Image (cartoon, rainbow over all chains, first blue to last red; front, side, top):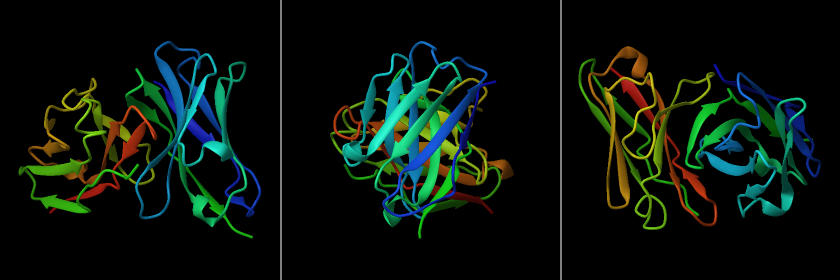
Length: 119
Length: 111
């Protein structure tokens, strides 16, 4: 059974960098037809796709965040990571990692981790 | 890219059916048959229940069905059960810009 688990600080100061990791178990992060994604949901708002990384390391990001985000892969640890730079209160959200299959369906999700941006 | 539009809530009695709409545009829902639906019980990981508009992953009961007409996709839950009480989110591939757009979710209450 494939499981994803997000981890990282729950509180980040404004203008700092939000860093989260998603540990993958039950599947290799090198699996074919697979991308690894980050998705977030501010309270009371829609889910927002942040970006994805392929098993080869190529990335695509939501244009609204493109200049502030990096997603990376660590095959030795079977995990992938999110870095969001220069955060503001608007980046406060529940952050999910998810496996994206065939480029069109998020078939496995983590439980999410709440990140608050505040001084 | 705007979020997909879902009603904030829906409800039904056990055994009844409930249908949730998901309205997008000709650039997302109307352009591709890549609409997926997710069930989310708070505190748990969201679960994929439909993909490519009508396809159910292994293990998802056939009480869950999907359809699409124009720019609107729909999820129908038939024979409502207590465990169906959850938040439901739709998603569509857009091909450009954001690539993936979600709805704000519909809270289904089993009366």
